[in-house]
Image (cartoon, rainbow, N blue to C red; front, side, top):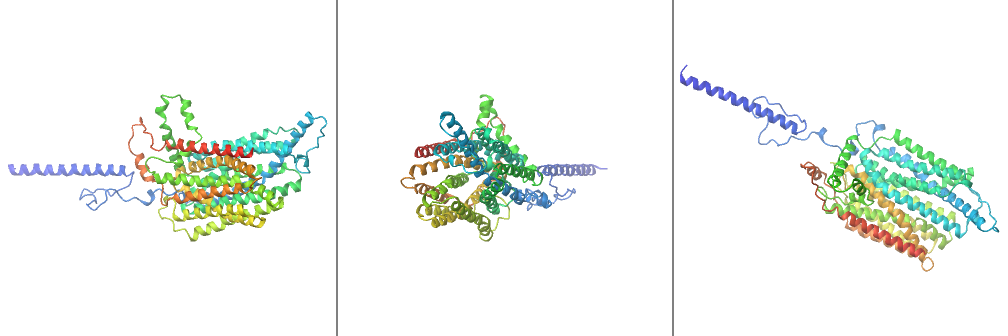
Length: 617
């Protein structure tokens, strides 16, 4: 073999070695790519060509259909019907609970009246030996001796303290329970919300069974237990969260409307059913036993029959996100005692932070929409709570309505409200709303949402203006029917709120809404009843002027809302993947706004409450 052959052989060996090296590099690169793509398979390299890649090939392979994250309402589509979450698993037991909620109001108020009247008569007899005590007939009968200002004032103060305690405790627990439902599922919180009510009703059963020896102040404990578990506000919020999980955004206002329809139907039917039961049995305690049985049935139905609407995967995502948020307080604990750090997490207004999101994915438009939607929703709820008793009292004063006329008015108004929620709202949504985006992603409010909210608030405003000018009973009833059309605002507002946040924050968002509702439940009745008490002698319509003006304010706020505004989850996910050393967490730019907003809300509520109480005195 000459020198030329030796050189050719060396070149041939070098070429084969270089080819093997390139092949190993391609294989290693292919494996690395597969790992980076979380196991997505690529065509195997056969040692020839470029492994199926060319200049036109995408840098990342196309996403497979099975790898795409499905929306919450499609995750259980492959399961049989009895394991697939649906609002129709919650609506029947919720309707029964609404009937119990409405049916217990009057019997419980009558029981409190009888207990306080008995205590007043006993104390009067002790202080005045010449006073002859007339026995109180518990569970019915003529108790005309109790219709005196002293007893009426004592009953009003007792129920005010009970509502205040239940409302404040509910304001503290509602957002916490809403956030817990994001991390541990809706069913557990729905069941827990009935525990306090059952314990409270057991105390009421004790009072109704042994009224002669029962200490009436024990009923305050029942109010406290009901508030600690969130009361009916949490049950409503978590039910709406359940509906959010299994309903596309375009249909959520209809789903929420079904729950509101059940609520108002239950409030309308409950008192009639309870009154019939008391009349037939002659025992008021039977109503409380039935209420307790309804809540036990509700707990059993939700526990054993209703499917969970949040998958384990989504629960774990919410838990991990909560853990990361909690870890941000780590460096602070090195300076401050642990109890100070924990105290920060129990700030009453801290849950409102979800209404003012900051950081990647958020924007000023998102914050503005969330703030305005929550404000309008709270105003609507507060006015409804604040005017409920005033309308009945005013009609009795102006038109001489007794129980029959008041009951007929409530039946007409609630029937119109239920018709609007169960018939009008679904039809409008089905035939007027534009088609839903095929991607199923959150896209914020659309023009249909905003127009529907403005339409509903306008009718509420028109109805309360009608209350101001109606000088006859039929016109007053017509005004109530017009205002009832505005009932479609509540589910639409709640549905619109859920379209601005990620799915794993739905419970937290509706829990914050429950906090605002609980505060409105305390402040609004005090303010508007105080206004009515202070102006009834001079111009009794003053309170309706104030109520209509409040609706006008809400109507004006709706014109600052914008469409197609939502939290960008893709940007938030990209930011979350950025490496962090875990030692320094920069302060969010907008977080300092939350205490300011909360302070303004608290200050306004305090001033309004002071004004109402001053007017009443």
